[in-house]
Length: 218
Image (cartoon, rainbow, N blue to C red; front, side, top):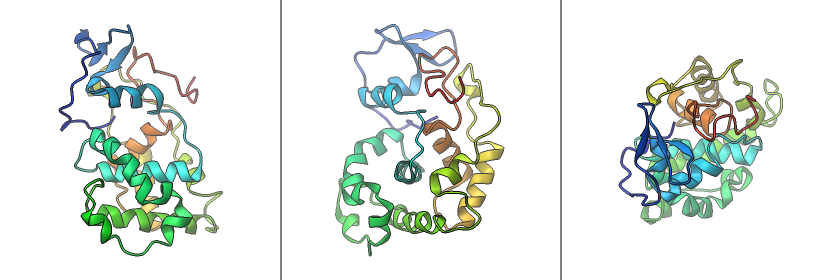
């Protein structure tokens, strides 16, 4: 579940009708969404079209891993606002091109970006680690296959926001494995958020119109 605690943008198109005490909001379109997805039009669109849908390409998984790392201590809405600029700076999150980048000093002066030295440098570090996975004899495939190998046998079925987990045994194992492979900003919470975002688990609330939309857990 994405953290939007510092979001202040309002969404005038969303209803404020709560569905019991589940944390679901019924929109004026009649569709139920979790409260965090109704905070702005940007978040609603992201929830309706991207969040929880399977991402299985190396570049796609690499980008989402980096973006989840940028979120640490921030809101997802802020990351979404900065995403286009981050994509521009990091060559569309092409790991081959990012791996050959030098320093990030110029990025620290660009207010379009998230100007955190460690997070910016981690994008380059993670690109190089992604390339190394391609030839790793312990990995069957590359980054995408490695990440998806931590898919659990079952997915959570939360009925309220309080029931949505923030970590799992698999995310703990993934974080440990990624760190061993040289990745940065990949703690268990970040890894679980990645698993949610790219469809490895389905934590859409039961009753949300998006529950089961990924097809992974149908």
